[in-house]
Length: 229
Image (cartoon, rainbow, N blue to C red; front, side):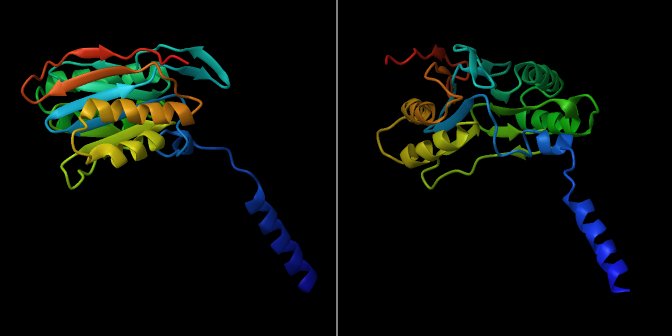
């Protein structure tokens, strides 16, 4: 009868309204749009590659450390930056270095292998971080969803990729500056990160920069100075 039907529909509606616990997939950095903790930006222009990151480590609303180094130089002219859990990111960087030892000079293959393991391994899939990896030729964003993303070049041949809580701000600023004549990759990186640091509460002005050049793959590391207030 109508009363029984109404009762049944009410139970079904209530069942669907019950909040379900978040799964690991929804908590993973690859699935969540709000990545807190840092800003990492990669610029490639006119044969020069720049990877830049800020130094702020946050725990909730507290700044735990202002000068952490989240951009690192790995073997074979490979640079890597990370956002998310520091311990998780270090674990992933160790795995990436193992893949690079297995496939020297093949960054693409190493990144794909890491992404596969990250998604399928019962231990690795619990790690919450995102990596931005590059050499003098290519750059990739690696996530726990098995994604290996490569940036699209602008009409002027400039590649830009940003990750982290302030990544969208830095990416937008970098794209606006990318094709401007007379502005090199490092200048774009610095100015873009300044925009992100001004807008994102999880990003500060303590920048660490690593550079690579097609003709000088060993590049020199450069550490930014804290901006005077």
